[in-house]
Length: 293
Image (tube, rainbow, N blue to C red):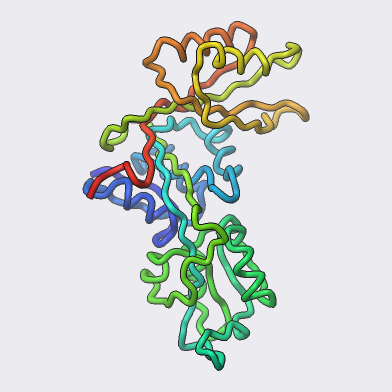
């Protein structure tokens, strides 16, 4: 049976993994920290890791990107996009109601969640819980667990429906994200091809470190793709962590390494002295088309 490392039970990662692997015999191994998720697969304890890498509202998850680039060597085997639906979670029995029947949130003194989830709900928190302290935890699931373990202390969490159900808690307010088009992009990383249905769309992720003393290097890098009419879906600069002012470029390419054009573009980029690392060539899925019921 395939073993999958991911963040805690009830997290968005858990919902997303259950979706992409539905119908497959898998064992999900939950970890509190993303470092433990990565290392579980590095050490061979699991076959793959599920990594949230990018969000519609907050952009890249920099910590996870840095782990993928600097700390481990795990090829990307698949990516998919899944909706991040966040809710305010607690105990209905601990709250009073206003005259109009709505919940009175004045007894909630603290709201816990992952920092990305809290950032996705700024408008709701500003309008309904401006008095509450916001506390960042390692995952939405950990936040929900803390609410479960501290009854009567005025604590609520931002988390998933699955997370609330797993801890026997109530949805105090559903879908509290600021934008309805809130999606998270997940990566499946591991040493071998994943047992997932094929997709019509294939991506290749590459890491390019330009030479320090080459004028116009970035222009030439992009030109290698442009004149071949190779589409790029994402380009992001991140520090190399070796010297101030040195950056690498993380690029997602809408092409396969099995094509003629992409390997030729990489060869041209390497010819000007840039270092190129292929992070993976993999199928890409969306929430609507990854599987049919």
